Structures are given as structure tokens and as C-alpha cells.
Length: 270
Image 1 (cartoon, rainbow, N blue to C red):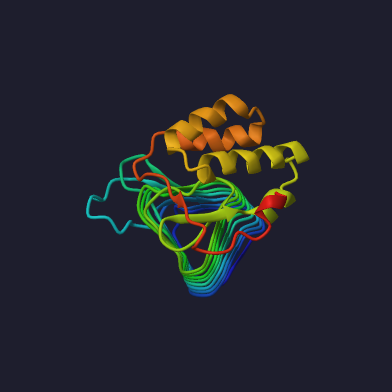
Image 2: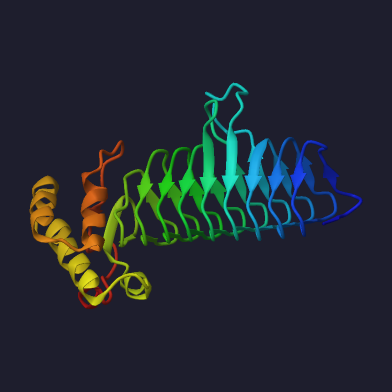
């Protein structure tokens, strides 16, 4: 454990073996930091925050500070950061609103500079947020989703597994798994590259994702009817993941297919 003499570390903090804490970093409160994590200069970690092993918290990052939420009244809540998470310069992850609730960042996530994760958000494994990506409160992002620079996501929106959101887009509706989100509340095709690279998917999985996507979003049928038909036709676990997402009750509605938002490169090869 190497703590720079200019760092400020609360006596209530629990610091694991091999942790490095840089100059002028502030660890304020009953923070827990897992082994081999590096906290760089001027980072600020506070509250009931738990950080896993092998993480890298870069200069000026803010983790676990109180939420930007008028409903928050100082109740104890948490911030949970998984293992091998990278939080780059001046990114912010705020703790939850509501006693006992948590903002959660899964293992192997990468939060680039000045990205923002609001209160009560839940990020799965391997999520990437590029520079200036903004998640409002209560956003859920499933495994391996990629959110490009400058994307803004409204509160209570869900982002499905392996979704790819184009830079500068904005969303106040749910983005289905495997899709490319582009523009304002629209999807333009399948994330073909992400699907092809996902090691658990077989050729049959990829084919069923493609065919289910076509039926649901490109057949011209009402969404509910198309999802019901897809449920009866596709048995692949991957296709069922897409169908299950669309059947789950939503507070925000589902983005619709808009082929004019961008060209659907390679979607037929998924």
C-alpha cells in the first residue's frame, strides 16, 4: 500500500493491499478500496463507496459524491464499483437516492474523461462510456453496451446488451439489445461487429438475432404484434434476449427503426 503524504484518507476507510493513492486525492468516509487499485492525484472518493480490485481512478474523478437530485435528503446510500474498472479524468459517478439504494458499475467497465453516471444507475459488465457521455438518474445499461461521445440519456431509460450508440445522439426511450442507436430516439440497424465478436454467440444465434430484428422492426407490423410473432418463431437464447427486453414493462417506450438516420452497413451479414 502506497499512500502519498499529501493525500487525505479518512480513518474509517478500508484500503486493500497494493493500493496506490496519489497526491491530493481525497478519501472521505467509510470507503472500501480493493487490492491493487490505483487512485490518482486529485481524485475524490466519498460516502459508502466500495471499489473492487485492480481499478484505476484517474485525476480529478469524483466517485460516490451526493446525487444531483432534489429528492435526496442526506440518507445513507451506496456506490458500488466492480473489479478492473477504469474511471478517467474528471468523470463522475454519483451515489444513489433512497436509503440503502446503490449506483452500480459492473466489472471491466471503462468510463472515459468527463463522462457522467447519475444516481441509481446500473451498468453491467464491460460497458464503455466515451468522453462526455451523460447518463441521467436510474438509467440501466446492460453488458458490453458502447455509448459514444456526447450521447445524452434521459432518466429511467434502458440500454440493451451490445447496443452501440452513435456520438452526439440523444435518447429518452429504451434502446434494444444489439442495435445501433442514432439521432434522437431511433435505431438504424444491428451492431453487426459487436454481435460477430461476442464469443458466446454461434452462427445460429447471429442468424436468429438478424431475423428477429427484421421481423420486429422492419416488417411494418405493430411492435406488440411483431414481438408476439417473434416469440413463437425464435428459440435461440440470443434472440430470446431481444424479445425479453421488448416484453419487459418500460417507463419510457422503445426506440423505433429509422433507416434514414444512417445507412445500415452490413446488417444483412449479421
